[in-house]
Length: 86
Image (cartoon, rainbow, N blue to C red; front, top):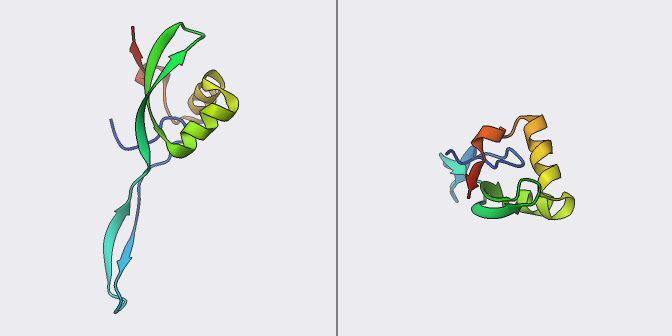
């Protein structure tokens, strides 16, 4: 899997390291990702998601089911990409 949040769709962006002499070299700003297990009550199973810190806050605020439906509607992830554990 790539380094993309499955809830928010955040991914790494490219920028510059700027030295004291203002010399610029390319660098990547990675997303703060976690591989996290959630209990999906509607399907009565455990699922594994790659979520950012902002994605965790969204899940805490609106709930896992609503966050997954919103992410699928926006195209950030698909149902087949969600890993089900038992």
